[in-house]
Image 1 (cartoon, rainbow, N blue to C red):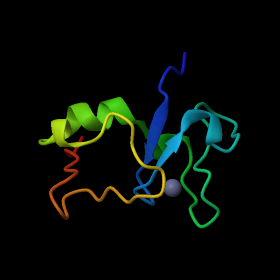
Image 2 (image 1 turned 120 degrees about the horizontal axis):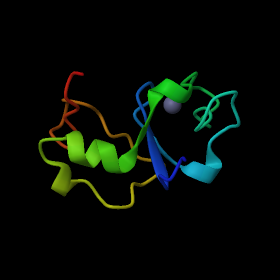
Image 3 (image 1 turned 90 degrees about the vertical axis):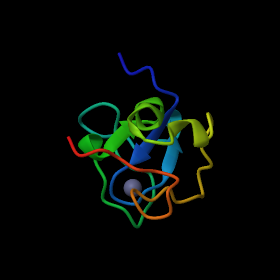
Length: 82
Ligand SMILES: [Zn+2]
């Protein structure tokens, strides 16, 4: 089951609404931005990003789709190494 409403792309650092993702062979699909080649494993549920970040409470519940959320750059988004 793919229940997340938003996904964050590891390649372009942008968030996308789940239904805006490009269709792909594997859920949840592929990054919809034409200049990005992010595929299913690059897409992380937004709620997981909020959970994984040091300052996740500073991230909006609903991400802006035209905004970049950099990992470990400006302090807004710090993704832990897996
Ligand atoms: Zn992307």
